[in-house]
Image (cartoon, rainbow, N blue to C red):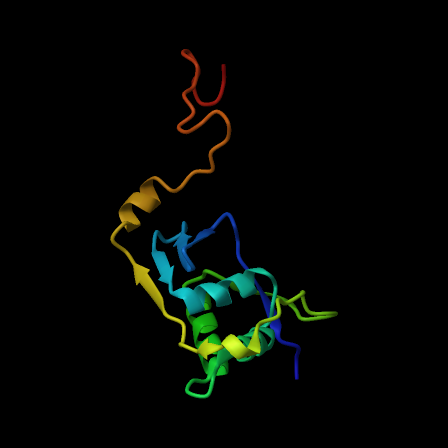
Length: 153
C-alpha cells in the first residue's frame, strides 16, 4: 500500500483567501470561484500546510465531536471535489514526520459538520479576460511611459 499523498496548490493557477473563517478560492485557469464553509476552509488550510488526508481526519476527530458524522468520508469527498476542479493536485507522497499540528481542547468540541464547497461561474468571463493581478508598489495597472511599445522604451 502506498503512502498517503500530500497535495499541492499551484499559486499561478489558484488564489485563495480566508475571510471570517470561510475560504474563497479562484481558479484563474477556468474562471470559476469557490466558497468553502468553515469546515472546508479548515481542511483547505491543512491541505495547504502539507497534511495528508489521514492526518487531517485525525485533527478533525480531536477537534470535533464526530459521533454523528464521518470525517474521513467528508475529507475524501472534499479532496475529490478539489481535485476534479483542479484546485489541488497530488504532490509528493508522505514521508518523514508529519507537519506540526495544533492541539485542541477536548472539552469544548462542537459537532462536526461535513464541509461544503460551492462553485460559482457568474464572474467567469471577467476573471478569464481580466484575472486578479498581483500588485507591487507601482500599483495596477502599470501605466507605461509615453512612447513605450510592447515592453520596449
